[in-house]
Length: 470
Image 1 (cartoon, one colour):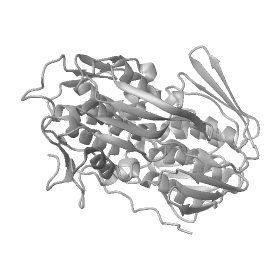
Image 2 (cartoon, one colour):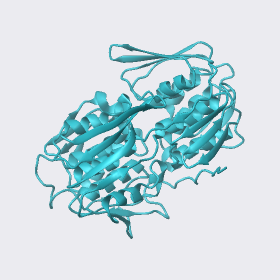
Image 3 (cartoon, helix red, strand yellow):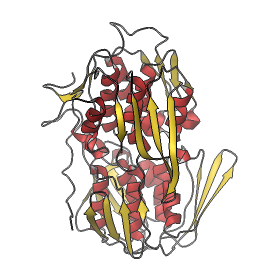
Image 4 (tube, helix red, strand yellow):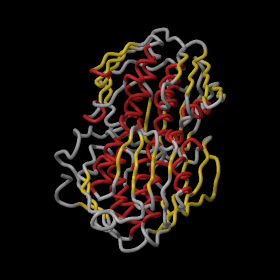
């Protein structure tokens, strides 16, 4: 059996010692090919966590083996589950049952993964254990209070740095209380943390969300045998979980991550002469906001071979070069595409007209201040962009950027993998090359990204260079 240790933590913000700067240039021909992208990160995290709480041995195929998910695997192992890698993408988890996690012997280092850190807070809150969570410099700067405050009501105690930031000490509740919590803003992470804590509580845990967010946690819990009810109350969505279920091991086939599929698909829409198909993409209706938006922009985007695998809709998505037009995206769509906004902003940089992306406040608390980083990415390549409240406005109006079409930028990524990949996509489509200061952390979510994109381009369109962003 293969059982690798998780990779070492990333360094601090921006380009670090040992950084791997890259430059992307127009390939001189269309992108072409059929590719598979890594498994869905959200589902991969949840499969490992729920598998650790199930009775029996769970077989997971298609698991994303990026650094973020490997951190979750290591954490589940530290909490007493048996977690082993059988083959590439194939993992086996022997769980301990609901309430059966044990106190870890050492600090749980979550690297760069905010999803893992927040969801594990929910797991720990329902178990009578003491644990300390930490992460890399980027994760230690991100707020956790929006998760720890509702979880404290179940009886758990959290002690962290100012703003509830990591390192964070967690004392789980000996007798956790069920929660009845209304989310102040849509957040799948907060919802999921509350539901995971509710597994160990006697009675009904109830979560009300103002707008529907990705429902992978609800789907996964049902798949393992939990009773989860979901009802609509106007625009609101009410989720009820019956506590203390006996979860049974169940096989999980992880679909391709739509957030990762976004990069080759958007690149194909922007590079003349392109046609790219991404196979087996997750098509959960609460995750397809990007595809809906691109269609509104005039994208030639089609889905074939639709099917259901592991309780999730999947299909093969094909993108062909398209002349895009600007769009006004309502804030209500944000939960279904929150991770895709940087690459959507790149698409908007090549669209005719003024694009407004509304309700993006959540981007301020991602791996970086992703809203500010996206504006800087566009501005570096001559694309007029601004933030108005929580809206991102990209004003092309059919006119070329100063000095020609977009391009020529040098982008500081601030250890944000989606900013790095989005900037490289811009470089493939732009008139002048685009460089990024570091790409090493792309592997947190998309191992092999550069090689895959170069394969589609038929050469080394993305290549290392000496130096970094200013």
